Length: 349
Image (cartoon, rainbow, N blue to C red; front, side, top):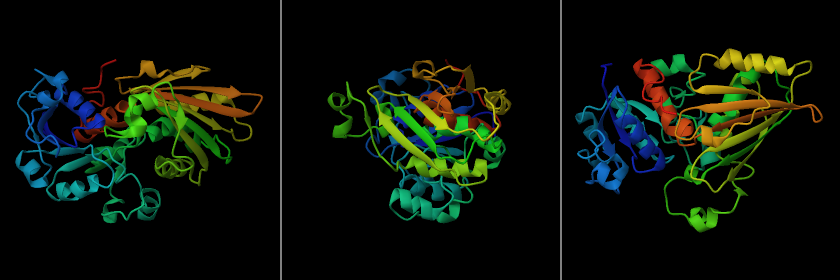
């Protein structure tokens, strides 16, 4: 591809879409040629989002209605889909048919099984033939596959925070077959930019609650990826919580070590997996990650501890749910697809 890759963002009015715009407007190798939103069609980026005034072409580029042919005519080579699940798939297929690569931030292509998709999302998958082609795009785990793909399925925010600490340990056979227990807390932006009484300031402020128990939709992709890493079914309980902050995810995972496994082996597996990864920061033993240190970045911070009394390994992680959990991870995948430095456009701290 050329040094400047022409890109489009569909669904650019949501929180993930806004963050994508922020990153793409400053990306050294991206040329933003189209942004779509049915509700904002005709408005300029800077008129709707004043933070973008005098940033690149934001004062001139206008929102348009989503249309694959129009995006092709605009010269888009890669399209980011920041759309709700069930909507992305409507555009992915025609975009691919026109030769435009797709980086999808929704859940539409994360699962390999159409049956599992129906179980968790309560409707038939509209394009099951594409599921086997899509790459579940954790860049630290599947860089080689991502580089060759034309359909990128970016992981969910909770799954990213859970999978990255666990996958190296499961691959190395360091964990027992006992069920995992996972507790995660997320800021309110994880629910999307929409009108919802339960997400009003007065409902969220000074309150903390769990939700989607016992079967959050992200459990489907978490289970899928853990099983691939372990080579067996991995059972887990996952309880997400809504906390009264704008963004950020803090996850704690409880696991049992396989007989004879030491904490030193756990540490060695994590170091081997991530020592050369620019966006995974291993904090070390008994170190608790803090969301304030990852906000606005593409970093995930990981710490760990061994509870000797309970015989349990505790894995801890923190990330920005609309950053590493969504938009900045999509940019990291964009860099891999295009052959750029994986950190291009993502160096801010």
